Length: 445
Ligand code: GLU
Image 1: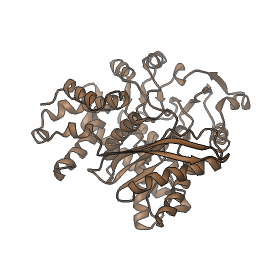
Image 2: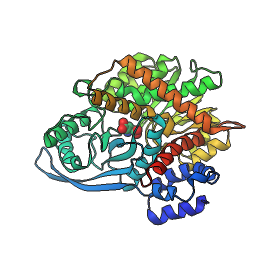
Image 3: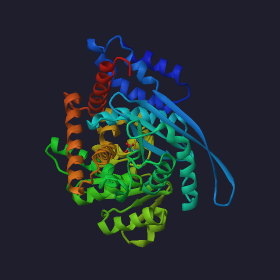
Image 4: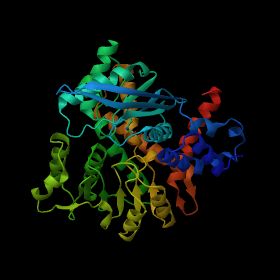
Protein backbone atom coordinates (compact mmCIF):
# COMPACT_ATOMS: atom_id res chain seq x y z
CA UNK A 1 0.00 0.00 0.00
CA UNK A 2 1.26 3.44 -0.88
CA UNK A 3 0.89 6.55 1.25
CA UNK A 4 1.14 9.86 -0.61
CA UNK A 5 3.16 11.49 2.19
CA UNK A 6 5.70 8.63 2.19
CA UNK A 7 6.22 8.55 -1.56
CA UNK A 8 6.61 12.37 -1.57
CA UNK A 9 9.22 12.05 1.19
CA UNK A 10 11.04 9.59 -1.07
CA UNK A 11 10.82 12.13 -3.92
CA UNK A 12 12.38 14.74 -1.64
CA UNK A 13 15.25 12.37 -0.70
CA UNK A 14 15.91 11.37 -4.30
CA UNK A 15 15.67 14.87 -5.71
CA UNK A 16 16.23 17.54 -3.07
CA UNK A 17 15.59 21.15 -4.08
CA UNK A 18 13.51 20.35 -7.16
CA UNK A 19 10.20 22.04 -6.30
CA UNK A 20 8.69 22.01 -9.79
CA UNK A 21 9.44 18.31 -10.19
CA UNK A 22 7.83 17.62 -6.81
CA UNK A 23 4.79 19.68 -7.77
CA UNK A 24 4.30 17.67 -10.99
CA UNK A 25 4.84 14.35 -9.17
CA UNK A 26 2.45 15.21 -6.34
CA UNK A 27 -0.23 16.27 -8.82
CA UNK A 28 -0.11 12.87 -10.58
CA UNK A 29 0.47 10.67 -7.53
CA UNK A 30 -2.36 12.41 -5.65
CA UNK A 31 -4.75 10.80 -8.15
CA UNK A 32 -2.80 7.57 -8.63
CA UNK A 33 -2.14 6.46 -5.03
CA UNK A 34 -5.79 5.82 -4.02
CA UNK A 35 -6.37 4.08 -7.36
CA UNK A 36 -3.46 1.66 -7.30
CA UNK A 37 -3.99 0.81 -3.64
CA UNK A 38 -7.23 -0.81 -4.81
CA UNK A 39 -5.66 -2.67 -7.75
CA UNK A 40 -3.85 -5.89 -6.97
CA UNK A 41 -1.87 -5.99 -10.22
CA UNK A 42 -0.08 -2.69 -9.54
CA UNK A 43 1.18 -3.77 -6.11
CA UNK A 44 4.77 -4.79 -5.36
CA UNK A 45 6.37 -3.57 -8.58
CA UNK A 46 7.80 -0.32 -7.18
CA UNK A 47 6.02 1.46 -10.01
CA UNK A 48 5.91 4.87 -8.36
CA UNK A 49 9.51 4.59 -7.17
CA UNK A 50 10.58 3.84 -10.74
CA UNK A 51 8.69 6.83 -12.09
CA UNK A 52 10.47 9.10 -9.59
CA UNK A 53 13.80 8.48 -11.30
CA UNK A 54 14.17 9.31 -15.02
CA UNK A 55 15.60 6.52 -17.18
CA UNK A 56 18.57 8.73 -18.06
CA UNK A 57 19.70 12.33 -17.71
CA UNK A 58 22.23 13.77 -20.13
CA UNK A 59 23.83 16.99 -18.95
CA UNK A 60 26.43 18.81 -21.04
CA UNK A 61 28.34 22.03 -21.67
CA UNK A 62 27.70 23.95 -24.88
CA UNK A 63 30.66 26.10 -25.87
CA UNK A 64 30.14 28.33 -28.88
CA UNK A 65 31.76 31.33 -30.47
CA UNK A 66 29.39 34.24 -31.08
CA UNK A 67 29.49 36.39 -34.20
CA UNK A 68 31.74 38.91 -32.42
CA UNK A 69 34.25 36.13 -31.74
CA UNK A 70 33.53 35.90 -27.99
CA UNK A 71 33.54 32.39 -26.51
CA UNK A 72 30.22 31.67 -24.80
CA UNK A 73 29.38 28.85 -22.42
CA UNK A 74 25.87 27.50 -21.78
CA UNK A 75 24.44 24.42 -20.12
CA UNK A 76 22.40 21.76 -21.89
CA UNK A 77 20.18 18.91 -20.68
CA UNK A 78 18.08 16.07 -22.01
CA UNK A 79 15.95 14.18 -19.50
CA UNK A 80 14.78 10.83 -20.92
CA UNK A 81 12.08 10.03 -18.41
CA UNK A 82 10.33 6.87 -19.58
CA UNK A 83 10.21 4.87 -22.83
CA UNK A 84 7.73 2.15 -21.91
CA UNK A 85 5.35 3.32 -24.65
CA UNK A 86 7.87 4.20 -27.35
CA UNK A 87 10.94 6.29 -28.13
CA UNK A 88 11.38 9.33 -25.86
CA UNK A 89 9.50 12.32 -27.24
CA UNK A 90 9.26 15.90 -26.05
CA UNK A 91 10.41 19.42 -26.74
CA UNK A 92 13.55 21.46 -26.23
CA UNK A 93 13.30 24.73 -24.29
CA UNK A 94 15.83 27.56 -24.57
CA UNK A 95 15.32 30.02 -21.72
CA UNK A 96 17.70 31.58 -19.17
CA UNK A 97 15.56 30.44 -16.22
CA UNK A 98 15.80 26.69 -16.84
CA UNK A 99 17.66 24.12 -14.76
CA UNK A 100 17.50 20.37 -14.17
CA UNK A 101 14.36 20.80 -12.05
CA UNK A 102 12.54 22.39 -15.02
CA UNK A 103 13.39 19.54 -17.36
CA UNK A 104 12.62 16.83 -14.81
CA UNK A 105 9.16 18.25 -14.23
CA UNK A 106 8.52 18.70 -17.95
CA UNK A 107 9.77 15.20 -18.86
CA UNK A 108 7.64 13.62 -16.11
CA UNK A 109 4.54 15.44 -17.38
CA UNK A 110 5.42 14.53 -20.95
CA UNK A 111 5.37 10.78 -20.21
CA UNK A 112 1.70 10.91 -19.16
CA UNK A 113 0.69 13.48 -21.77
CA UNK A 114 2.16 11.38 -24.56
CA UNK A 115 0.38 8.31 -23.18
CA UNK A 116 -2.94 10.18 -23.42
CA UNK A 117 -2.47 10.77 -27.16
CA UNK A 118 -2.71 7.00 -27.74
CA UNK A 119 0.37 7.21 -29.98
CA UNK A 120 3.48 5.12 -29.24
CA UNK A 121 5.65 7.76 -27.55
CA UNK A 122 7.66 7.80 -24.33
CA UNK A 123 8.43 11.03 -22.46
CA UNK A 124 11.48 13.27 -22.51
CA UNK A 125 12.37 16.95 -22.40
CA UNK A 126 15.49 19.04 -22.69
CA UNK A 127 17.03 22.34 -23.63
CA UNK A 128 19.44 24.99 -22.48
CA UNK A 129 19.78 28.14 -20.39
CA UNK A 130 20.70 29.94 -23.63
CA UNK A 131 18.57 33.08 -24.11
CA UNK A 132 17.48 33.49 -27.74
CA UNK A 133 15.80 36.85 -27.00
CA UNK A 134 17.47 39.63 -28.96
CA UNK A 135 20.11 37.34 -30.51
CA UNK A 136 20.97 37.63 -34.20
CA UNK A 137 20.14 34.83 -36.62
CA UNK A 138 23.86 34.15 -36.93
CA UNK A 139 24.21 33.64 -33.17
CA UNK A 140 21.13 31.40 -33.04
CA UNK A 141 22.65 29.26 -35.83
CA UNK A 142 26.01 29.02 -34.07
CA UNK A 143 24.39 28.05 -30.78
CA UNK A 144 22.09 25.45 -32.37
CA UNK A 145 25.04 23.83 -34.15
CA UNK A 146 27.08 23.64 -30.95
CA UNK A 147 24.08 22.32 -28.98
CA UNK A 148 23.39 19.57 -31.52
CA UNK A 149 27.04 18.53 -31.58
CA UNK A 150 26.62 17.56 -27.90
CA UNK A 151 23.12 16.07 -28.17
CA UNK A 152 23.28 14.16 -31.45
CA UNK A 153 24.70 10.93 -29.99
CA UNK A 154 21.73 10.45 -27.70
CA UNK A 155 18.82 10.98 -30.12
CA UNK A 156 17.41 9.21 -33.18
CA UNK A 157 14.03 8.36 -34.74
CA UNK A 158 13.75 5.17 -32.68
CA UNK A 159 15.58 6.46 -29.63
CA UNK A 160 14.60 10.01 -28.74
CA UNK A 161 12.86 12.59 -30.94
CA UNK A 162 13.05 16.19 -29.66
CA UNK A 163 10.85 19.07 -30.89
CA UNK A 164 10.26 22.73 -30.03
CA UNK A 165 9.05 24.43 -26.85
CA UNK A 166 9.57 27.91 -25.37
CA UNK A 167 12.41 29.64 -27.27
CA UNK A 168 12.65 26.85 -29.84
CA UNK A 169 10.45 27.51 -32.88
CA UNK A 170 10.66 26.68 -36.55
CA UNK A 171 13.92 28.63 -37.05
CA UNK A 172 15.72 26.79 -34.23
CA UNK A 173 14.34 23.37 -35.29
CA UNK A 174 15.59 24.08 -38.82
CA UNK A 175 19.11 24.92 -37.60
CA UNK A 176 19.17 21.93 -35.22
CA UNK A 177 17.98 19.60 -37.98
CA UNK A 178 20.59 20.96 -40.42
CA UNK A 179 23.30 20.40 -37.81
CA UNK A 180 22.11 16.84 -37.08
CA UNK A 181 22.17 16.04 -40.79
CA UNK A 182 25.75 17.31 -41.11
CA UNK A 183 26.95 15.35 -38.09
CA UNK A 184 25.19 12.07 -38.94
CA UNK A 185 24.99 12.21 -42.72
CA UNK A 186 21.39 11.01 -42.64
CA UNK A 187 18.09 12.72 -43.37
CA UNK A 188 15.53 11.21 -41.02
CA UNK A 189 12.76 12.07 -38.58
CA UNK A 190 15.05 12.79 -35.63
CA UNK A 191 13.23 16.05 -34.80
CA UNK A 192 9.63 17.15 -35.23
CA UNK A 193 8.34 20.62 -35.93
CA UNK A 194 10.31 20.74 -39.18
CA UNK A 195 9.12 22.98 -42.01
CA UNK A 196 6.78 21.10 -44.38
CA UNK A 197 9.39 21.32 -47.16
CA UNK A 198 11.96 19.54 -44.93
CA UNK A 199 9.84 16.60 -43.79
CA UNK A 200 7.60 18.52 -41.40
CA UNK A 201 3.84 18.10 -40.97
CA UNK A 202 1.21 20.61 -41.95
CA UNK A 203 -0.74 21.90 -38.90
CA UNK A 204 2.17 21.15 -36.51
CA UNK A 205 2.71 24.79 -35.61
CA UNK A 206 -1.01 25.34 -35.03
CA UNK A 207 -1.56 21.98 -33.30
CA UNK A 208 -1.17 22.85 -29.60
CA UNK A 209 -3.49 25.86 -29.89
CA UNK A 210 -6.06 24.19 -32.13
CA UNK A 211 -5.99 21.07 -29.93
CA UNK A 212 -6.63 23.24 -26.84
CA UNK A 213 -9.79 24.61 -28.42
CA UNK A 214 -10.94 21.17 -29.62
CA UNK A 215 -10.59 19.94 -26.04
CA UNK A 216 -12.52 22.94 -24.68
CA UNK A 217 -15.25 22.35 -27.27
CA UNK A 218 -15.53 18.71 -26.15
CA UNK A 219 -15.85 19.85 -22.50
CA UNK A 220 -18.60 22.28 -23.41
CA UNK A 221 -20.40 19.79 -25.65
CA UNK A 222 -20.46 17.35 -22.73
CA UNK A 223 -22.54 19.97 -20.87
CA UNK A 224 -24.65 20.78 -23.95
CA UNK A 225 -22.97 24.16 -24.29
CA UNK A 226 -21.08 25.82 -27.10
CA UNK A 227 -18.11 28.09 -27.46
CA UNK A 228 -19.80 30.71 -29.60
CA UNK A 229 -20.21 33.94 -27.63
CA UNK A 230 -18.14 32.91 -24.58
CA UNK A 231 -15.56 35.41 -23.34
CA UNK A 232 -12.03 34.02 -23.13
CA UNK A 233 -8.94 35.50 -21.47
CA UNK A 234 -5.70 34.11 -22.91
CA UNK A 235 -2.20 34.69 -21.55
CA UNK A 236 1.01 34.52 -23.57
CA UNK A 237 1.69 35.52 -27.16
CA UNK A 238 3.76 32.56 -28.36
CA UNK A 239 2.81 29.75 -30.66
CA UNK A 240 0.38 28.14 -28.22
CA UNK A 241 -1.47 31.37 -27.34
CA UNK A 242 -1.75 32.75 -30.87
CA UNK A 243 -3.11 29.58 -32.50
CA UNK A 244 -5.48 29.12 -29.56
CA UNK A 245 -6.78 32.63 -30.26
CA UNK A 246 -6.99 31.87 -34.00
CA UNK A 247 -9.18 28.81 -33.45
CA UNK A 248 -11.29 30.58 -30.78
CA UNK A 249 -12.04 33.36 -33.29
CA UNK A 250 -12.99 30.78 -35.95
CA UNK A 251 -15.47 29.37 -33.43
CA UNK A 252 -16.86 32.88 -32.75
CA UNK A 253 -15.72 33.09 -29.15
CA UNK A 254 -14.77 36.53 -27.84
CA UNK A 255 -11.09 36.78 -26.92
CA UNK A 256 -10.17 39.80 -24.81
CA UNK A 257 -6.48 39.37 -23.91
CA UNK A 258 -3.03 38.18 -24.86
CA UNK A 259 0.08 39.00 -22.84
CA UNK A 260 3.86 39.01 -22.65
CA UNK A 261 6.32 39.68 -19.86
CA UNK A 262 5.66 43.46 -20.08
CA UNK A 263 1.91 43.15 -19.47
CA UNK A 264 -1.47 42.49 -21.07
CA UNK A 265 -2.94 43.67 -24.36
CA UNK A 266 -6.64 44.10 -23.62
CA UNK A 267 -9.40 44.39 -26.21
CA UNK A 268 -12.74 44.61 -24.39
CA UNK A 269 -14.74 44.37 -27.63
CA UNK A 270 -12.87 41.16 -28.57
CA UNK A 271 -9.98 40.72 -31.00
CA UNK A 272 -10.82 40.53 -34.70
CA UNK A 273 -8.85 38.42 -37.17
CA UNK A 274 -7.17 41.65 -38.38
CA UNK A 275 -6.03 42.33 -34.81
CA UNK A 276 -4.67 38.78 -34.61
CA UNK A 277 -2.71 39.25 -37.86
CA UNK A 278 -1.13 42.42 -36.39
CA UNK A 279 -0.19 40.52 -33.20
CA UNK A 280 1.29 37.67 -35.26
CA UNK A 281 3.39 40.10 -37.31
CA UNK A 282 4.61 41.78 -34.12
CA UNK A 283 5.52 38.48 -32.41
CA UNK A 284 6.42 36.05 -35.19
CA UNK A 285 7.97 38.32 -37.83
CA UNK A 286 9.34 41.31 -35.91
CA UNK A 287 9.96 39.36 -32.66
CA UNK A 288 8.62 42.49 -30.97
CA UNK A 289 6.79 43.49 -27.78
CA UNK A 290 3.00 43.76 -27.38
CA UNK A 291 3.28 47.25 -25.86
CA UNK A 292 4.42 48.48 -29.29
CA UNK A 293 0.97 47.53 -30.61
CA UNK A 294 -0.96 49.54 -28.02
CA UNK A 295 -1.47 52.56 -30.28
CA UNK A 296 -2.09 50.58 -33.47
CA UNK A 297 -5.84 50.22 -32.79
CA UNK A 298 -8.33 52.31 -30.81
CA UNK A 299 -9.74 49.01 -29.49
CA UNK A 300 -6.51 48.13 -27.65
CA UNK A 301 -5.41 49.06 -24.16
CA UNK A 302 -2.01 48.00 -22.86
CA UNK A 303 -1.99 47.20 -19.14
CA UNK A 304 1.64 47.27 -18.07
CA UNK A 305 2.73 44.74 -15.41
CA UNK A 306 -0.75 43.23 -15.29
CA UNK A 307 -1.78 39.64 -15.95
CA UNK A 308 -4.90 38.83 -17.99
CA UNK A 309 -6.86 37.55 -14.98
CA UNK A 310 -8.30 40.89 -13.85
CA UNK A 311 -11.18 41.03 -16.35
CA UNK A 312 -14.60 39.36 -16.56
CA UNK A 313 -14.46 36.11 -18.54
CA UNK A 314 -16.08 32.69 -18.85
CA UNK A 315 -12.91 30.83 -19.81
CA UNK A 316 -9.30 31.48 -18.75
CA UNK A 317 -6.60 29.89 -20.91
CA UNK A 318 -3.12 30.30 -19.38
CA UNK A 319 -0.80 29.69 -22.35
CA UNK A 320 2.51 31.21 -21.26
CA UNK A 321 4.55 29.15 -18.77
CA UNK A 322 4.60 27.10 -15.57
CA UNK A 323 3.19 28.58 -12.35
CA UNK A 324 2.13 31.79 -14.11
CA UNK A 325 -1.27 31.75 -12.36
CA UNK A 326 -1.06 31.89 -8.55
CA UNK A 327 -3.66 31.83 -5.77
CA UNK A 328 -4.19 35.59 -5.91
CA UNK A 329 -4.83 35.34 -9.66
CA UNK A 330 -7.20 32.43 -9.02
CA UNK A 331 -9.17 34.60 -6.56
CA UNK A 332 -9.30 37.44 -9.11
CA UNK A 333 -10.56 35.09 -11.81
CA UNK A 334 -13.20 33.68 -9.47
CA UNK A 335 -14.39 37.21 -8.67
CA UNK A 336 -14.48 37.83 -12.40
CA UNK A 337 -16.89 34.91 -12.81
CA UNK A 338 -14.64 32.42 -14.56
CA UNK A 339 -16.25 29.00 -15.12
CA UNK A 340 -13.48 27.02 -16.88
CA UNK A 341 -9.70 27.18 -16.56
CA UNK A 342 -8.06 25.42 -19.48
CA UNK A 343 -4.31 24.90 -19.07
CA UNK A 344 -2.62 25.34 -22.46
CA UNK A 345 0.88 25.93 -21.05
CA UNK A 346 2.60 23.14 -19.09
CA UNK A 347 1.55 23.29 -15.39
CA UNK A 348 0.54 26.99 -15.49
CA UNK A 349 -1.35 26.89 -12.15
CA UNK A 350 0.44 26.76 -8.83
CA UNK A 351 -0.79 24.00 -6.49
CA UNK A 352 -2.52 26.63 -4.35
CA UNK A 353 -4.27 28.11 -7.41
CA UNK A 354 -5.51 24.66 -8.47
CA UNK A 355 -6.75 23.91 -4.95
CA UNK A 356 -8.58 27.26 -4.80
CA UNK A 357 -10.28 26.65 -8.15
CA UNK A 358 -11.32 23.11 -7.25
CA UNK A 359 -12.69 24.27 -3.90
CA UNK A 360 -14.72 26.96 -5.62
CA UNK A 361 -16.13 24.57 -8.23
CA UNK A 362 -14.31 26.11 -11.15
CA UNK A 363 -13.59 23.38 -13.72
CA UNK A 364 -9.85 22.94 -14.28
CA UNK A 365 -8.73 21.09 -17.41
CA UNK A 366 -5.08 20.03 -16.89
CA UNK A 367 -2.30 20.68 -19.38
CA UNK A 368 -1.35 17.06 -19.96
CA UNK A 369 -4.77 16.59 -21.60
CA UNK A 370 -5.41 20.09 -22.98
CA UNK A 371 -2.09 20.75 -24.72
CA UNK A 372 -1.42 17.21 -25.95
CA UNK A 373 -2.36 18.26 -29.50
CA UNK A 374 1.15 19.58 -30.16
CA UNK A 375 2.94 16.37 -29.37
CA UNK A 376 0.13 14.38 -31.02
CA UNK A 377 0.80 16.06 -34.36
CA UNK A 378 4.51 15.49 -33.72
CA UNK A 379 3.56 11.81 -33.51
CA UNK A 380 1.75 12.15 -36.83
CA UNK A 381 4.86 13.85 -38.27
CA UNK A 382 6.88 10.78 -37.25
CA UNK A 383 4.36 8.52 -38.96
CA UNK A 384 4.58 10.60 -42.16
CA UNK A 385 8.40 10.50 -42.03
CA UNK A 386 8.43 6.73 -41.52
CA UNK A 387 6.03 6.23 -44.44
CA UNK A 388 7.80 8.90 -46.54
CA UNK A 389 4.47 10.67 -47.02
CA UNK A 390 3.09 14.19 -46.60
CA UNK A 391 -0.51 14.36 -45.50
CA UNK A 392 -2.92 17.20 -46.35
CA UNK A 393 -3.71 19.76 -43.66
CA UNK A 394 -7.30 18.56 -43.70
CA UNK A 395 -6.23 14.99 -42.88
CA UNK A 396 -3.89 16.09 -40.07
CA UNK A 397 -6.50 18.44 -38.61
CA UNK A 398 -9.14 15.69 -38.60
CA UNK A 399 -6.72 13.28 -36.86
CA UNK A 400 -5.87 15.97 -34.31
CA UNK A 401 -9.53 16.64 -33.55
CA UNK A 402 -10.21 12.93 -33.12
CA UNK A 403 -7.24 12.52 -30.75
CA UNK A 404 -8.42 15.47 -28.62
CA UNK A 405 -11.95 14.06 -28.47
CA UNK A 406 -10.57 10.66 -27.46
CA UNK A 407 -8.49 12.28 -24.70
CA UNK A 408 -11.60 14.03 -23.47
CA UNK A 409 -13.47 10.74 -23.47
CA UNK A 410 -10.67 9.11 -21.45
CA UNK A 411 -10.93 11.95 -18.90
CA UNK A 412 -14.65 11.26 -18.57
CA UNK A 413 -14.07 7.53 -18.19
CA UNK A 414 -11.60 7.94 -15.34
CA UNK A 415 -12.74 11.27 -13.90
CA UNK A 416 -16.49 10.93 -13.52
CA UNK A 417 -17.61 11.96 -10.02
CA UNK A 418 -20.94 12.85 -8.47
CA UNK A 419 -20.37 16.61 -8.82
CA UNK A 420 -19.22 16.34 -12.44
CA UNK A 421 -16.05 15.44 -14.32
CA UNK A 422 -12.79 15.69 -12.37
CA UNK A 423 -10.53 16.34 -15.36
CA UNK A 424 -7.36 16.37 -13.26
CA UNK A 425 -8.01 12.89 -11.90
CA UNK A 426 -9.30 11.61 -15.25
CA UNK A 427 -6.21 12.70 -17.17
CA UNK A 428 -3.81 11.47 -14.50
CA UNK A 429 -5.36 8.01 -14.28
CA UNK A 430 -5.87 7.50 -18.02
CA UNK A 431 -2.22 8.44 -18.70
CA UNK A 432 -0.79 6.52 -15.76
CA UNK A 433 -2.61 3.25 -16.54
CA UNK A 434 -1.19 3.12 -20.09
CA UNK A 435 2.37 3.71 -18.85
CA UNK A 436 2.07 1.35 -15.87
CA UNK A 437 0.60 -1.49 -17.94
CA UNK A 438 3.45 -1.23 -20.45
CA UNK A 439 6.01 -1.18 -17.62
CA UNK A 440 4.45 -4.31 -16.09
CA UNK A 441 4.36 -6.06 -19.47
CA UNK A 442 8.06 -5.36 -20.03
CA UNK A 443 9.11 -6.53 -16.58
CA UNK A 444 11.90 -4.03 -16.32
CA UNK A 445 11.27 -0.70 -17.96
N1 GLU B 1 6.88 21.01 -26.31
C1 GLU B 1 5.61 20.46 -26.67
C2 GLU B 1 4.94 19.88 -25.42
O1 GLU B 1 5.10 20.41 -24.35
C3 GLU B 1 5.67 19.53 -27.86
C4 GLU B 1 6.56 18.35 -27.74
C5 GLU B 1 6.75 17.54 -29.03
O2 GLU B 1 6.14 17.88 -30.04
O3 GLU B 1 7.51 16.57 -28.97
O4 GLU B 1 4.20 18.93 -25.46
